[in-house]
Length: 250
Image (cartoon, rainbow, N blue to C red; front, side):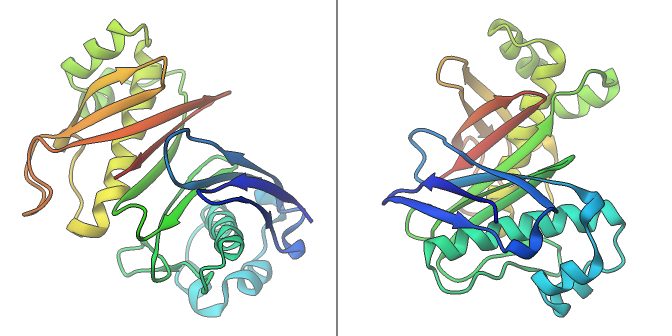
């Protein structure tokens, strides 16, 4: 039965994953973001060991039926993310450990919990905190890609952002992955409030600190009566082998 120790805002707690998930979930490790009062973990999983009966056992039939039409890899990453979230919620003793899926396919977290899930290849990550700690939370993982078209870069990264990254010695493709991920984290943090999709040009990275591995991202438009133009959010990032992870907590 795989298990890890992670540090939350109170104490070190053991997170255990249902033994029935082995060998589907291969490894679990903590993600530590200094200065951010959230619990973050990552797990590696092997889609080859995914099965629908396993997903039904872990997720329940109602939740499984919401993704039953998805392809194999999508169901595998969904199961890994929800299993990781359930393990963390269980360790935090918040009551319900079920993370449902809304009609917009976004996670529906238990009462009094803020959370975010992301996947890339065979890695799932999750960030959780109590409702009183933060109003918004978003986490994202993206591969550090080796090739991307200039046309795609231009839809994600502004000239100002490209120059900012270049000034800090971040090469073009790494900058694309970092900025893409940061904007995804912002979207995940804000979507539960606005309840609609907004474009990448709705926000701009305005500051990067490569020593602290932090960034600031500013809204370019009004998203709601509360989320107004020029509102700034602070985030942080980690580089791990072939991936970048970003986190925004507000």
